[in-house]
Image (cartoon, rainbow, N blue to C red; front, top):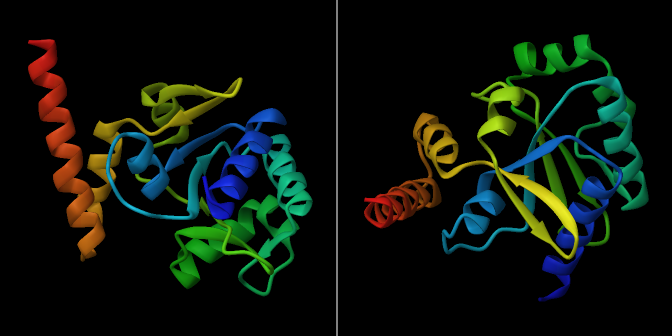
Length: 173
């Protein structure tokens, strides 16, 4: 595991360890589901309950992660502010970046699936005693197919996810 992967894993462990309700989505979820690709930004869908958001801010501070936009991190707690970012700026994610590493976390402000449904469908994985929820292959595929226009890596993810699901179907039959 290289330094970037190690940092990413430490961040995931901390989020899980403090009890943040989140589901891993995007590229990391694709990798965890068996798609071969490189990515070092962590995309997560979350519960927007105040206590959950406060835990996320605590983890961001511990990892010296700061908002990419010129807003205080605490703005994430304000529902009206989040709606404003979505409606007036077309924002999809709130991004925290590190000033001293490529580590980045994208928190979906709005996700095509509601968090309760996404977490219910998610696959539970355990690594080193920590539990993580990873978006299901079906939900990843659903969301990837909504991207318009799709990037080359999205098209590749779609193709590989479809192949993985086909392979699973053959093993079930």
